[in-house]
Image (cartoon, rainbow, N blue to C red; front, side, top):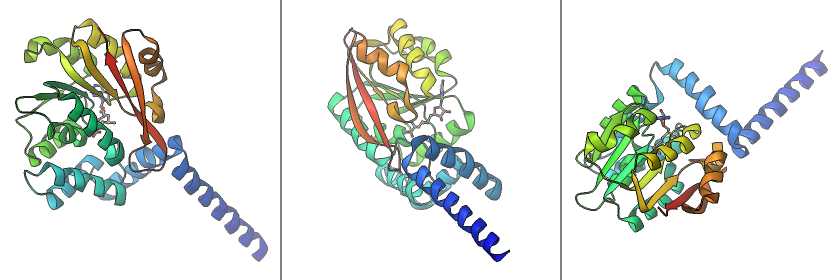
Length: 259
Ligand SMILES: C[S@@+](CC[C@H](N)C(=O)[O-])C[C@H]1O[C@@H](n2cnc3c(N)ncnc32)[C@H](O)[C@@H]1O
């Protein structure tokens, strides 16, 4: 009997170690663990949502009007307390460098979530520049609005709530925009390609506009990558990095629209 129990305990321990190893080294396992299992468990235990927990941490730990302290607070929360799907600190540095080299007047972000990348981008914009960010989940959008306000960046940001496929065709009329200089693509991966084609059709890109797509390796956007890497209308480059707050490969694809 004792031998059976010991064997069972050893088998369970091996299974646990296997799951821990897979979650640390495999992107799909890591996303499933953090995004489904742990998030639902914490929501159930705390009676809150992950975006609310992020917002509460920002309100407690970040200085009002200080964008950098908002970014640091979210990075700290997501690496030490609870993972979340922000672009993260490592890929965030690549995003920062591309915003600085592009010096955009008009930026579009697809997928706001809690406003982490919105704050990262908006804090680096030159005077008079605007960032339009689109989020279809009203709860996430409300949290993002408060995070952006906490960072003191609400004057630079236009947050639109709704689906990108519906809002993109309305942008020219709604906001009096001609073309976007930079587009940060970070919503559901299945929408990367159709929304890129929609931006082209709606005349929202100019020769030289930069598209920067997140998560092109994990979870991956193969149809989008095939398109920008093979179309004569784009000059495309991969920036290797890591999935937010984890040691799993991921990267950004920068694609210059050639017109
Ligand atoms: C990966 S998160 C964005 C993370 C954010 N850019 C950051 O780095 O802080 C993706 C977000 O896109 C939103 N989303 C997905 N598909 C969308 C669509 N078609 N239109 C608007 N928002 C969408 C989701 O609700 C989710 O909040």
